[in-house]
Image (cartoon, rainbow, N blue to C red; front, side, top):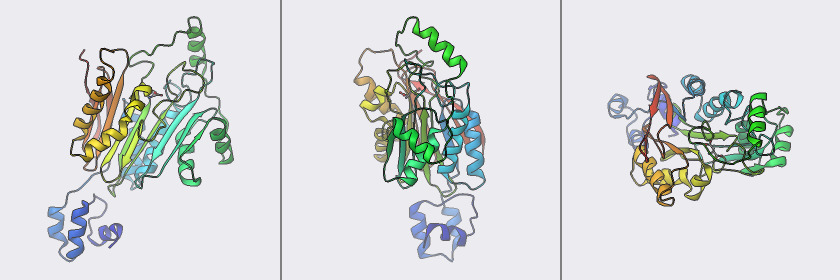
Length: 331
Ligand code: ASP
């Protein structure tokens, strides 16, 4: 029996879902639903995202709570940050590259491991939505630069000015020294990576960023790279990253974390191991921040970072929670 039909028959309503093993056990005894309800492991919808983006998780939660799927929740949730001019690491208002151009990266992944990404795309306010279109409407996973922008126009996206006056003034100030250095929890702060589980128990994720401020033209970090900035396996869980993307790419961070969960680690343990792997390749370095966030199929979450300061937001039917995380380097 198909899972959706079973849920309807079992009159659980939309409160949660059974684990796969329970679904098969129920297939054998569909009449005795009350016993199954007792045994059932109910998974509640949940959304988590990097940093304190309560408006984003609230939006995603509204989608989940009204029965929407995890993919829609992710897209609509992260769009809140893409549209927020005050967030200078995502979408409109993002810091430009060293030439003064705002270039955006984003990716999205669904419960069937379908994925889409745009890299280094200019003039489009919602790269997450373009990434979704790449996933759904093309045979490809990634579109970059002019090609991504052209594709967006073909799909009806409008040209937008992404460089706000504030970001432009800061860039002009930066040009006086043109020194490229990441500032922990500042320049690499605020990329949004989001993971959600919907009422069917399905997981989706998304990640969107303007990347490192004043980067080389054409630079792409981890955020739009499936496996690095984001990875989802609907059987296991999902992970996402924020921080210096070059370091996350070197260990294929988000994929690593999902694989560690597959081997039995909790989301928290997996994030800690992910950061440790990176630090093992960077002995003595203290000049970069990375934060990992993970969720497993049961709705357990975890986060860990290199330096103190990384937090993540969560929304469930118990409300909004902000989680500070432990760090590899202590304060
Ligand atoms: N991970 C992003 C990148 O390297 C930056 C960030 O998280 O702010 O492009």
